[in-house]
Image (cartoon, rainbow, N blue to C red; front, side):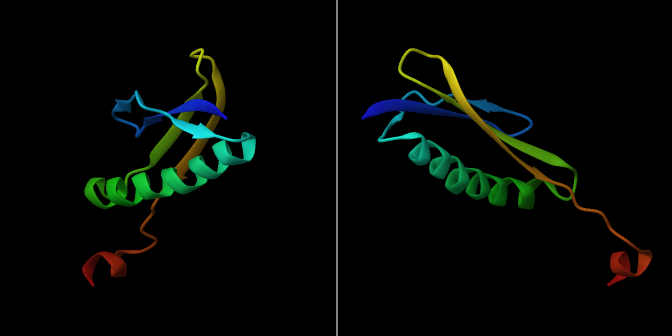
Length: 86
């Protein structure tokens, strides 16, 4: 197994993964992105409101080369004034 590093950008800050984790294959890397990005977004969307937000994961191998990227987007839009008064 090889070690991969999962860096995150939440639209404001960049968090570099210094520990990494062992992954058996490319499926493990993709699954980690699919699991982690929604968890990060869930907490951040609540604290920052309805403004459009993008969450990006950049995966590096042991040599520091980028090997995979995944992005999760959130955009909320109020459709009428009634929703704002309820």
